[in-house]
Length: 308
Ligand SMILES: *Cc1c(COP(=O)(O)O)cnc(C)c1O
Image 1 (cartoon, rainbow, N blue to C red):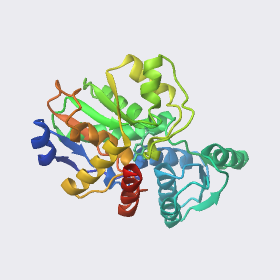
Image 2: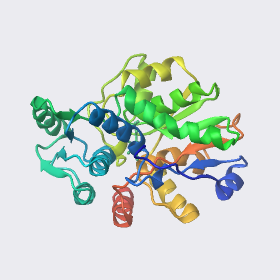
Image 3: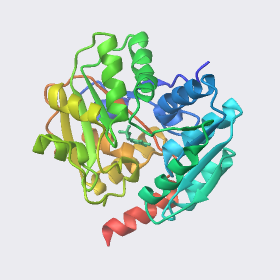
Image 4: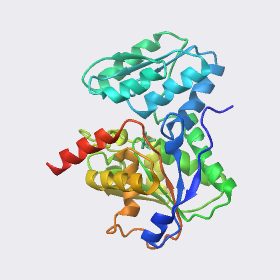
């Protein structure tokens, strides 16, 4: 039994009228952990449990950490999440609410991750990577199985890119069903490690993440995502934080679902009238990847910051 749920696939009347296209939404925001991450991370945790691991360790203060915590609770195994001091109170609460132990260590993810790796001296502990793991990609690919099984027509997939696990999983699902179509891979300015890498023809590590879309804040994408973007039918787009945030607010009004700017980035490609890379697309499938770490107050705080 998988830990994720089958999510609704809905036709968006509002976005279709707005864009003159037939827009489908895969509502991964409705996963019990609040994001698509549960698909891949749940699958990875199940494999580790079958292989005899008795505890999970994560160093993500975001949706990956929440997904590991959720998976551990469902499987009855303890979880430790090591996060840096910068992790928001809300994210800590969400992780603790799933029964995981939080250890706060260091001022950056690198330091937290260093401590998490030390905990793996215990051979019964499994480290769960947020995006760079073929089991995680296979788990994510199940969202495409559901869309294909529903029989809807789509001629492009729109999604956001952080470390590239979602991109790798969606590409795997499309490939499995022989469904050829472009993937529009969206990042925000200040977190655009994939688009930079494609421009430079090599995998680039960003000096810093400056976007509010912290869930897209991998300084370097995984090798698989880079290969797909270089060799496959992947179009890289970069939107501003403001465009991503506008899209979150519009989407909340239109579809009554609150998502993080990391997800708003992909939605911005439809809400933004100046985006012109979709002329040849008639029916985009948007992966509404979700994200649990923003609430209304946080959206307001970002709005104030971007206005200032
Ligand atoms: C993790 C995450 C992403 C990016 O996924 P990657 O697999 O790292 O590319 C996008 N949106 C949300 C809400 C996320 O949690």
